[in-house]
Length: 452
Image 1 (tube, rainbow, N blue to C red):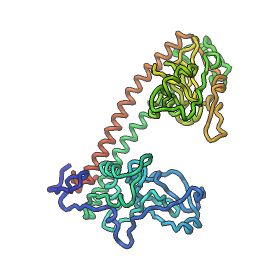
Image 2: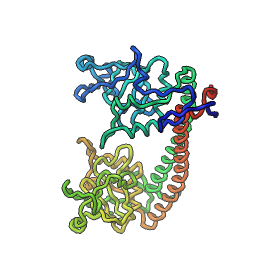
Image 3: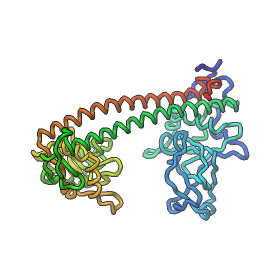
Image 4: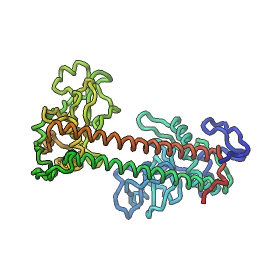
């Protein structure tokens, strides 16, 4: 693809040079006509929200994706609320710009939702003057360099926002030629759709390989590695038949559970001994992005709550749903104490920790585990006593070791393939990002590149 014949300095650092003939426009000056609009959405409180789909649709910042409308949160307000709050109705085809949550300033074009529509105060409605094509402006505000700038001028320590005033002063490079706007929008629509399809294809392949990983575990922990092995009824509903030389035992006879300690909020410090919380225990891994510590002296003081390397740890609150059981093997010898609403399982000499770990990742076990969860409260909970009563298959230690090795070999093979696809996806996304940035700032000329 070629460049334009000549360029000029925009005087705006994040934009750089733009083609001769292009202009710089503040966002607020894109809507100066009588029929145009640049206005915040409405302040609508949760008490005014209803779930009657015959009413007026209420959309929020969560509905605004990067250049795409996202269907979620089917909420509404009544005609009475609309009149009482003097709400502004928005229409299909309006641009909606989010002032909240990264990437700040992202926008989308509102589709026909089959209802009248209002939006939340953290969205800005942009109904531009007729000389500006909305699909062109959508891409102009999907530029990653634009996002970097809006992030810099946003305000807020815990939740960043940009005011409508600051957003309105953001400068965009624009061409006032309608044909050129249309060419740019058409080109990007076609090329980004192609890239998105490539990404979707790779994601489908990743999902298939993840399913294969699950199938490997399901087969290995309930049937072993010998396809010709003689089976016997397990006597356990979730297990069905198992190899005839395997045993079945309850969790509680294969080790012991230790529940976490209830530390006071005043116990926590900014450094010292790490405390493992429910947020740290994810499916198959530990995540330390949420860090908590207590004083060094607590480690010996609460000796019974020390987490050791190779312990199997469970989150007892919100431990499952679609992502699987929240459990992991501790893979560090760092000093750690276990917080409440977690439990650690310390295996006896009858089983390897990794055998128990892979066992609980099997689809069959997850279903059985799910039956034990108390879902009557606001958050699903399970007790370590409930887990302890679940019956599981137990082969000999030597066979456990062989099965573990086989699972990990297969996992390694599949993870290599999955990682390759993930890197390809990252490259596709990087190309998509660069392409949008280069086109909407005029670094490349696509006027004669529009695909049919």
